[in-house]
Length: 256
Ligand code: PEP
Image 1 (tube, protein in one colour):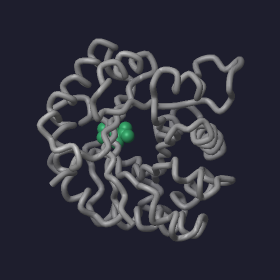
Image 2 (cartoon, helix red, strand yellow):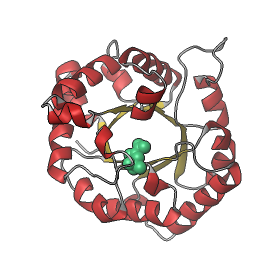
Image 3 (tube, helix red, strand yellow):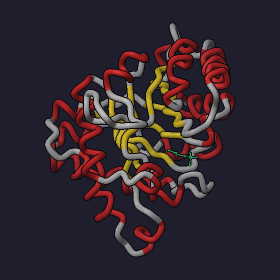
Image 4 (cartoon, helix red, strand yellow):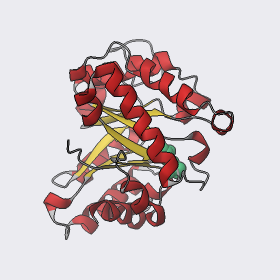
């Protein structure tokens, strides 16, 4: 089963529209000398307000643009939220759902992750669904219990066909923005567990075909080792996606 590597940048609450366009231009121009059929899929996820200019800057290049969140309702009184139709209209192809910062600071639950992800795939967006344990959960031996629950609840009610529009991102919370990266072996172990869980839910063919990204302090210096792991199909990158040089170095590590 061949799974195309996906290198995705989560800009979080960083960059004005002009800064975002400059970053996209930096990425696209650094990739012009790369052989197109060796390139991984490349995605940037700016804040909502930067999406339109990022889409404009990415036009005609290999860079795709996604959002960092989406609401499940098609419209209505949901202050501060955006719908799938709005994201598609702005030119998004993907949306991140259930990032640990949304779970931690904005009351995101497994149930709302499920609703957002289902709305995204039903609308034709690729849902990049984040799961991952806290340090306390890892240290108490609860990693697979927590990640297993997050995966089962995020995709409850999905069909195998829905899963073709899903990417899972394993992001151990203790590794996000901390500079503390999971070892290649720690990451591979949880990725294999997620794949097994998806296989139990949707059949092994589906489990084998869903891409699972690693996220948590992925940098140019550690990307190659992580990306070589059998069940790691790319990265969701925060800090290192804010500088074109670092992000491109990770893209190139995926091509090696
Ligand atoms: C993230 O926000 O998804 C992330 C992985 O951040 P960082 O790379 O900065 O740890």
